[in-house]
Image (cartoon, rainbow, N blue to C red; front, side, top):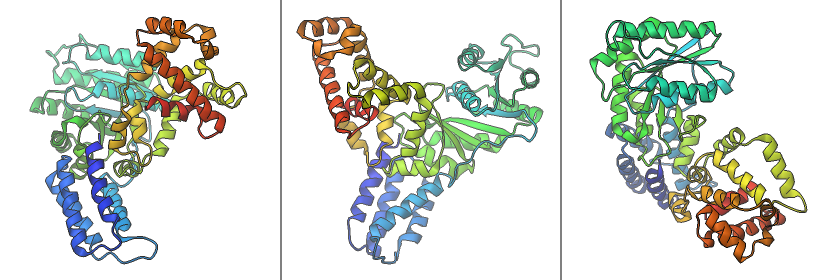
Length: 450
């Protein structure tokens, strides 16, 4: 989502870092340009002004160092200030000394609260925190059923009563009683964390805040996590302020970070509310939730990449046995066949959208990714083609003559040219592996990005 910000900010810094000497006027001009870039990216006016003021104070009169050019020093200062603006350090969840730890998830309707509750529960389950879900949205039709289906998918307990409205439709006292019962049910199952999916509205209103205030007073949550849609830009900041003033937000989860928003919300929300961004949603899957790291996010904005994040995704997504089998096959004399190629692609797909993975590589600019013309449907097309082959054809691609390729294309519903291109790409991957210049997985990613 930081494409425009990253491209424009990097362009300014490249112009400055290419100069052997930076005058004070050069720095002031560069700082003005950076402010314009931030405003264009939807960063708040006051935050942009404070950012460039700190930048100017540190940059004007940079001492000359023999080993580092002034322009490179400026890049480091911008990086440090971005880290500061994003929160400085990773801030994790706070857990109660005596379980269960209750966490309220709050936010407007449509921000992705229910899905985020399931994603966070899946993450806490992997971390051995024994999560439990409570459906407290008694207003949105099928909200409880949606949460129940997600809870079943990730294998965690869940409590809710859609038809329970003794005090009137969605009465506050009814919701409070429902959540209290949910916490009691969590205790009975020896859950260590309880995630309460609260009701949202189309906009902040008094009834919504009164209900959240009553819930907070009744269950004393350790965390109040605001789920904010990064695509809403500065509205996300205004929404965060409203929730923070009323219920005391302890952390923020930004959803839809894999979208095409300008990024201003992510840069502004921490500075305006003081509440740290703790997680970011990067996709639709229940595992598409990442810890927010200011250092790594600043690195991605300045096109330094996020190799650590890429490795973490790979470790989380790849099955150890399958990865080991592919590694052995790739290093063998016979090499990989199309069956292995298909398995490698499926492993890559589990890591998330290919566009996002490429964006985590150092030096990969938005322009380069645009030129790569990554089509997210391409992996599915390749899978369809390989699955239309017979086992013999997958094991021995050399038998794929013209008539076989026509049959495969018809079976996959793709043009014959795509079948030919796949075979050619597979041959190139094999050659790369034989030379030892690429791993099998890297070769697959390289070919799929074409």
